[in-house]
Image (cartoon, rainbow, N blue to C red; front, side, top):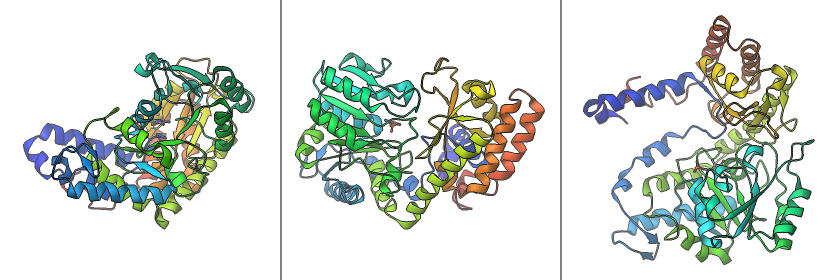
Length: 421
Ligand SMILES: *Cc1c(COP(=O)(O)O)cnc(C)c1O
């Protein structure tokens, strides 16, 4: 896949080849990552790169759209079937732009939005002051109960009644538990609000039906396709038929330009893959692996936020170990285990330091790791936490981690021959 670049631009080639080495030898546990199947890579770089196209099938702004029309319609059909959705917008480029598409469709500047706090599990695109949309719409936030560390639905309900938002958002990037969509849907209805679920992290688990789907309960469901969905760098929106035109207009021309037909092709392939028995068995194992990791870390003296996990994410409070999220992340990085520091609910530490880490098991589950290996990873993590600045300790941990992951190739042998790695 790098045959020509290797000759014409050795500098770029080296960077990409090094990235393959890094991924191959590391235990990747960033919760927002997964390993894209080879077909996804093939299609993400396919001939559709050359085609510029705007509009929707039957109402395009450029000629020469016959093949692209077939592609988009096939992807939409597959997505509808996979998620049992009435309408699909298949054009958004990512999870973020899926959210922007919904905002553009249903909100006017100054409208009120109620979403989950970023530092308790939400997402930047749900109204963080750091995101430009916080200047356009008026965001308010709900959070988790300090005891259970699960969504405080009573608080959510009270806030919804009080502020009467135009839109309520559920779903986040570091919430390890199931969400009661039915309850929030009722709250939204009573408040006269639209209900959007951002399932960016869990759309693979939902597709495989190993956790409940928000589709029957939400007006709009947005997603990224790079997390548990294991697809290309893209996204999609699902909605009820009555909102089809509104949503499509919100996406184009409301917030985006021409389509990314390459990742659309890869996304359409992924919609078929996500319906397969192979995909389903990976998603099932993800739940088992995440629970195992939470139990093992807990047994080793780490505190697990909310006590456990229902999805692919384990949120760990490191205060019982006397170390910060930043220190643990950096020490694990030296060992070849990639996680990210993350604030935990009511975190006394800043977002740059944090008291916790977020750990995800999607990539390693795709590589074939099961409970036995998860337990070993938990032990390595515990050994790192015991002396995160002791070079000899980290070296010993690195050897353990390398030996473990070497038994589980990232891709079948020979897949990247022209990377020459
Ligand atoms: C990751 C994420 C997004 C953004 O998705 P991208 O595909 O990275 O743009 C949006 N919402 C949530 C909840 C996410 O976790």
